[in-house]
Image (cartoon, rainbow, N blue to C red; front, side, top):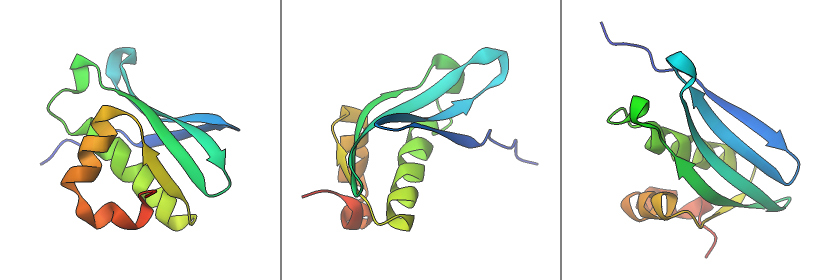
Length: 99
């Protein structure tokens, strides 16, 4: 039996927002973004506390942003070094990468 990972929540506050995974004990893994326009947003920061290390939390956050970008016809600028590295590792995400 595998342990179920916490769900990813989207907090959208207009021009700023974040994807967050809340763990036990108040730990939060987050990826913040800035909305540039109706069809473009920037991933500007990813932070994964030690409580989430080794669980793929950072990758899950970026993957969720990619899925949302596809669903809503948006492009992403991965300014955050972690997100940029994930885009390099996942060429299948090129459809949502702002060139």
